[in-house]
Length: 265
Image 1: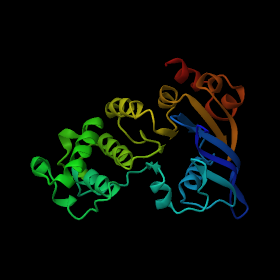
Image 2: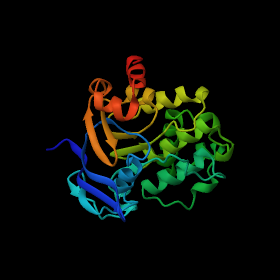
Image 3: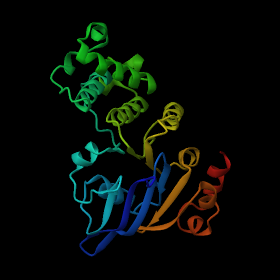
Image 4: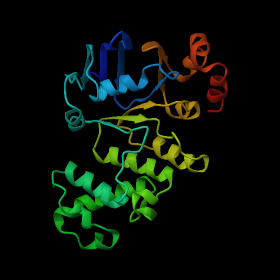
């Protein structure tokens, strides 16, 4: 059995006369910690939008666990195990972290979501049996993502780093096989970054992760394999050491700042 969980072959996306994704072939292995990097305009967002179904490819194919999903709707891809976080928070400001996770977990467990809004920390000890599994999973996620202390605060009041943690917790609540992390530390203040970096580093080993990121410190701390995208095409791929010492990568993208990031880990 192949250990490739997500792959694309000859993936092309054209917008009129512009080729945003140029014949991209790529594989994500089971349990991967894989980073996708490249300069602004390299086509990273377009590629992720193709993988997740936001965009439909002009040509080429995408497979998830050996099944062609090239034309599947976004929610069908989520149902099959591909979940994405976004560069910009996609959260309900008036919900608390507990309510938000209860809604997602209850839907994931097939229990619907009519009851979740009334849930709060005071009600956790008096849940009917069918809700107990939901609240237990919520508490597990709240603990894992350092959100217990703010579980009853409206999301709009949370520090930005906590909002990012909640977004990743929501993604994990969907039981992903493949998790696409879109710039998880974008906009996070320096004082809140370490908690987020440690949490990302401790994500379950059986979840295959594709990280899209500009922060080279995070890339080299997290990834065991890196793909470099330039002008919509794959320039090269390899281990962090290989990428750090690739003259093409230095020339077109990172310059010698790559040495500093790689050397610090």
